[in-house]
Image (cartoon, rainbow, N blue to C red):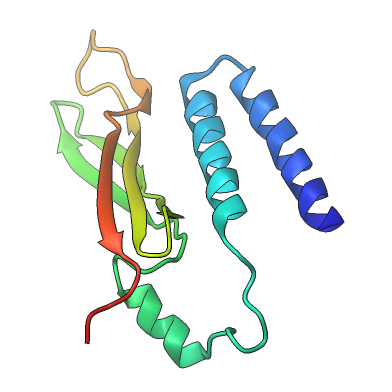
Length: 147
């Protein structure tokens, strides 16, 4: 239990430092780090009897409503933008965080956060780098699958 407390304290102080940097991206990272900590507090460590085989884990990773935290990244390049033939770069960070509401229901959050690098597409238009529109999605899912 002491090890979890130490990791939680370190992550919490890191989130505070990131948020205090004043940048929008830092604030968003701090929010999702905090959410991951909160959802980590609701998860119970599996006992030896409950530990999952590699096959069961592989099945759960394919299930979009499984009780697993995942953080997939989608990297996109858009070529030939404007008269300068600029290349736009978009990295979508898509954390999926399940939160156990009770023994019957999970709340699953999936947020798409695009990080965009937009070079100048034409003369007189400045380049830009930053966070795009954040798209949160929330699912309510039963914990026990029907047979």
